[in-house]
Image 1 (tube, rainbow, N blue to C red):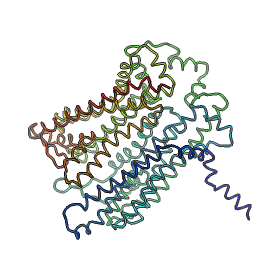
Image 2: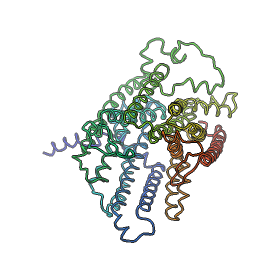
Image 3: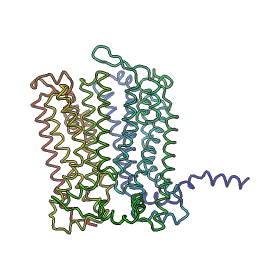
Image 4: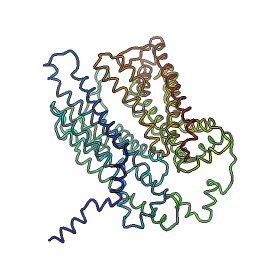
Length: 610
């Protein structure tokens, strides 16, 4: 009996799945101060969000009876705010933390050594994944006391707290596993982050939305186009079980609208969690298989890097010639213009996506956009302002991510490949290196800005967007490009690793455009000065874009005279002159601080070279 129990425990023991690599990663993580700082910042932001939601619901000079009557609404609002925050934040952190999990082992030539030990490939994958995800599980556990306290207000069942945590956890596991999968084939962290973000955005958000719009029955409208929500179609309910974003939306909708039980909504969160876990396990198996092949070839000395080198080796006698000649049969290409700009522009944004594949991807993107235009035109939404606000905000967010990731990895990638000392030893001055890196980042991000410009110009010609929007959006583009690129280059010059440069740049944007408005809102609710929150919020480029497009898009606004246009910014109405002045002031301030970041980046070039 004891022998049977011992054998069963050996099979089911979770330590057997993770191996000693999990213990090693935990010991390393426990000594890093940044993990404790991350938890402190996380709980601080949660507390701030709770305070703001509380003040917004029950604050003011009202009677005690009225405040008590709003306790249940306050509880629901606070809980859904916390859930939405941790759902988005933990997935972003998981993608960043696992972006170099396997590539570090490959390019430090330690993956082959691991295969000479009793550790198998599945234990390598599980050890890396579980050690990083454990830090995120701790973040989710931190929020549990807040959720439990808020439940005292009433209106929030434990079933919602449990289901939201499970949906968030399975989404984090899938996002982390996908990031780990891409890290096998890509050395650079920014490439992994971009690929993971695009994959999740396309397959779990954009594609379900396209199919949903095509399959969903037309919504009926009454009066000024106020939608009446029909019962959820079966096809749309099926999409909610394969997309964590739609699953979280429906789960929160059932909390806020108790009249819609799970059976009516057609959504059951245990089924969704089981599907996401199944996809994650399948992806882990694929990762283990690929890691085993790479590790064995590295252990036997056949390759020095990842799978890309494996394919070069299999091409035969021209492998060395291909590597040295950059795929041109050994032909040396002459450098034209600035060497740094020429080098950065020659390297593909994402390996394997250069040349013909880039053109194909661009055509597919434009084709998908045209399909969405047709779907919105069929529903009669193209002449509404919210449609153009959605498109432009999406493009601005994409461009911001590209600027952050590409600029933050511009110099650290040179340090990781040990080419940075060689570059500094050349006769090029530091300012030319800096400017070459900055121009290369902007040219790589130009495709996203061109998509946004194409959308705006197209509907200006059709008559759905006022032409003044082009001028205002151009001002936003200028300062976003200068500020984010300069900040990314600064952190790239300060850090040695791309991962931490990207995290620092994202952290700066998060503090400026999320934390600062949050604290501003808290101060505004306490001091009853609404001007503070409006000022903090308008410093956000996404908010600026939304205000610009809501005031200048739509058939009614497009046909309005320039002097009669009105922009609504958090209850304050502005005309064209005042909104242009505010945008110009914001642009000058951000450009000034961006130039300061650029100057500091140049001063750091000769420090921390190795």
